[in-house]
Image (cartoon, rainbow, N blue to C red; front, side, top):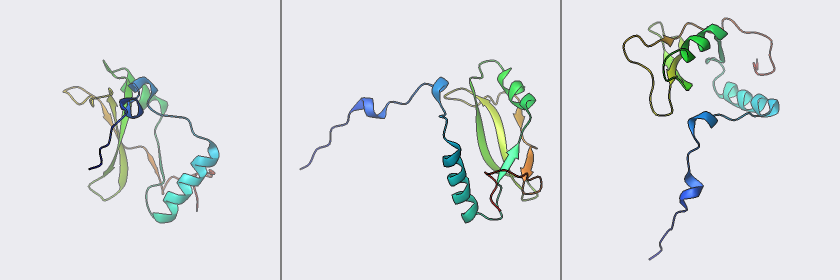
Length: 116
């Protein structure tokens, strides 16, 4: 009978203040191209102003922002932005949640990440 031992250090989750990692523009180009090739009519990007992020971070305990894929009642794909901690979304009474960013397609721009 084969047994497996696990090294707990190899599965350590980094703290929330280190969630996210910078990637190269070449990686970003390749990854967006791969996605857009499979989903040619799908949502490519959404622009949100800096004030949206500031309002989310102004909320008590917000240490990050969680982004959800969603579909509006009219069928339009969108992203929902909510202030968050590592373990919770800030969704109590009075919390702020955002949508209505400028979506591409419809509001596309010339970018190396927007593949036609």
